[in-house]
Image (cartoon, rainbow, N blue to C red):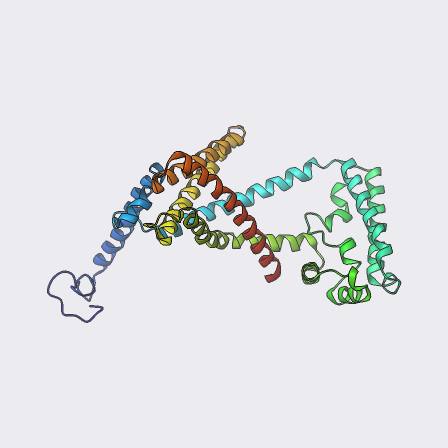
Length: 365
C-alpha cells in the first residue's frame, strides 16, 4: 500500500488504494486502462447532457455536495478548452487565409494608386520634421528612396494594371504595424531614435509609453530585417498562443464580478461562483464549436453563415440567462438587470485583457 498500512480487505482503510497483486498481469493492466477510459467517457457524456440541457444544474449539484456522478469542473474545463482551442485555431487560420485572399483579389488599380499617393504625401510631409543634421544621412535618404519607389510603382500601374503583385511600396508595409513616419521622425534604429528625441525640446519628445512602444517596434524591425509583414505575423502568432491563458485568467476575474453582484447571498462562497463560471465557459465553448460546425455545413451548401452565427449567438445569450436564473434562483427582473451589468463588466474585462496580453506579446518576442 502507498501508506504502508496492513490491509485485510479489498481496499485500504487508511488511503483507499485497491488491494491488488504487486506483479500485475498485462490483461489486468489493459482492463484497468479500458475501465478508466470508459469511466471518463461515461462521466463526460452524462455531465455534458446536464451541462447543455439543464443550465446551472451541475453547479447546484456541486454546491449540494453531489459530485461523484459528474466530471469534476476542472477536468471538464481542461478537456473542453483543449478541444475548443484546437478546432478554433485550425478554423481561424483557414478563415484568415481566405479573408486575405479575398481582400487582395478585391483591390482595384485605382484604389492601389490612391493608397500609394497618400503614402507619398505622408512621407513628403515627414521630411521637414527631420533635423538638418539627420536629413542627409540614413533616415532622410531612406524616406527619399521610398518616395522615388512610389513614383515608379504608380507609373508602372498606370502603364499596366495587371502588375499589382509587383508593387514594392505596398509589399513592405502590407498588413503591418504602421508606427513609422511622423511619430518616428525618420529613426531607423533605437540609437538613432534616442539621438533624435534628445535633440528635440522637452515638450516635443514622446512620453514614456509611446517611446517604449516605438523603440520596441524598431527592435523588432531590426530583428526581422525590416519586414513589417513578418513582424506583424510573429506578434499576432504569439498573441494567438496566449489566448487560452488570457481566457483562463479571465475566469477568476469573471467569478469575482459574480461574487460582487451576488454579495448579499451569504450562503455562496467565491469558489461556488468559480464552479458556476467554469460550467458557463465549458457550455459556451461547446456552443461556439456548434456554431463553427453548422457554419461549415452552410458554407458547403452556399448558404450565408450569418444565419448560423445569429442562431448560436441567441442560444448562448439565452443559455447564460437560464443558467443565472436556475443557479442563483432570483426573479426574472433581478436576473436580467444583473445579466446586463455583467455584460458591461465583461466587455471592460475583455478589452483590458486583450490590451494587456497583446502588449505582452509585443514585448516578449
